[in-house]
Length: 265
Image 1 (cartoon, rainbow, N blue to C red):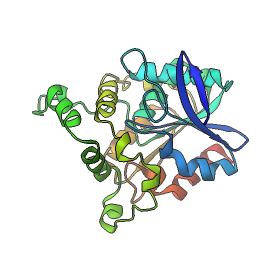
Image 2: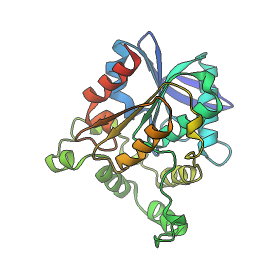
Image 3: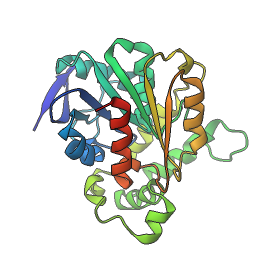
């Protein structure tokens, strides 16, 4: 089991393959399991590395409050510990926000940047005067759910309507955390971290070759990826049809092909 000490925290990761290094950062409540198909398939042409962020999967928690900036610093520290000076770095959802922050703060770590179904600023209903939700209500909606109940609620939002209607989830479920891993407090911690970051005015400063991949039927509207594309100079946007938020699992062939085209592998 590969573990590395990052600033005093045991951090789990998976690594497979040889060649150019592709570092994968999962989203809120996730683990390196989310990248299981990429570890299997893209590792035939690349060195693929998938990290468990602090408190996720098999990694120890941060000693301070989790923020996007602290997660980004942890990824940078992880790269240093495994002696990875530069890589193609990809982030999904909250992980996409993390790698955007890292690209702004530590651009020298990037060969290329890949943002997967993400945004520069997650919607925050607690700050929206048109929404009745308060932060306390949102907190309760996460913390009062049992793991199995939270798992069911989350999965219903992760995939396209087409996949959910046809029930084509059996081959995907093995890459999702089990009910015991769906800790409501982790989801709320990640929600708080995400709502505290707003990079909309900063992403114009990203000067790294960038691929933005979005699911056409994602819970994050394609307009969010379009905004990234319009504001990151020279970026490439690929929208995958009939794909939801977890497009790397739902449409792995199209997803992997988009990455390989971008990398030129």
